[in-house]
Length: 270
Image (tube, rainbow, N blue to C red):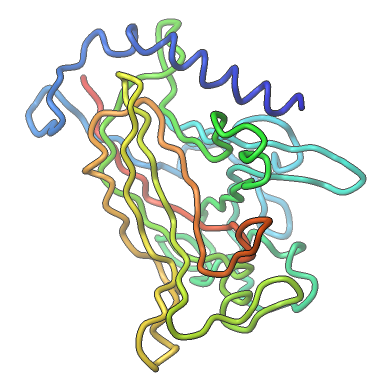
């Protein structure tokens, strides 16, 4: 498929760029001195515009989402219906359930807005598990830092990101739908962040968006913004995200493969 080839090219270019991106970086995986500076997700000067539903106006373009120094993969195809995966920005305040029609409200989040409050921007990710099964070497939800001086990307040290459940995923777990079953005690839903390192190796960390322990189901699901510590990933060139769930069958995960993020913080060499 054309999209798969595009993703493969994305990673190939990044791999070629690694030696150049690292020219000014040390081997230290704990950048806590004055050689480094912090960069975080900055909406104020992003230049993004949103439609009446609070969805990024670029949602139906096959172009990456850029917010400040960060580049988030975003893919769009029209195959009789609109097919979007990767990352999409939004700022909807709608937190309702729409049984049987959730795909039309897939960019809403349980807090009703970003980490800065209701109605503020955030980013929703749709992990395309089937697409990755066709081409496991081409992650569909990737984040990198924009390069400079003809460098495709630059190395960075992830610090943390805030994450939460989308309404689509939450209601599928809390109430079930025509595909996913209602979660019971013992079920779980997790987000996996993988750092693609400059030497070609990877390291991953996990965060549970649902952890159904105990009889009090009101504590099972993440419904506000929680900090996901990424610092153990060390120096990376790309972060990719995948998901796993206890609700799956022979075709894969049945829980909607959606999560939301905001307040991504990293360090870079000066």
